[in-house]
Image (cartoon, each protein chain N blue to C red):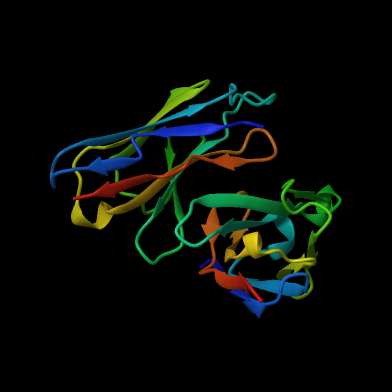
Length: 116
Length: 111
């Protein structure tokens, strides 16, 4: 059974950094794209970005709203995907979901609150 | 960027009756490989979203067959043949053809 568990969320001040982790199990992690999607409180869904498998160079795509501030990476030996978030803004406050592929399976999400 | 527009945004329904949600994209969602990467998601209250339909009309494993997807090009529809209480939640369409991928605003289905 596919299982995705996000961790690392919390309260952080504007301008600071936070790293989220997505620990996967139940499938061959290295074979899949891994994506991040976020949802601001009471709002809809927004793509953050994704990372290709290393078979396809492990390159990433990021939404314009986070480009230059957020970085997605992966450690296939540990079955973990990461979302490094720098220069956080109040508008980054959201539940961050990790998904397998392009939103085929979702984790439970982790809440990031950016506030002074 | 591709803009996804859903209608209606709120959908009051009666148990046992059919329901339908429309989604329109600002550009054709047919990819160069001939596939149309269009999906429907359900988000029940307090839960993570889950994908119901992928590539327009393919149901995910475990999704009841009362859910069906159809459409082509820029116009797509999600139909529920007979609404059940567990179907309450917000439904999102999503295109995965052109980056940045994008979701519709969501349609709140309520009994």
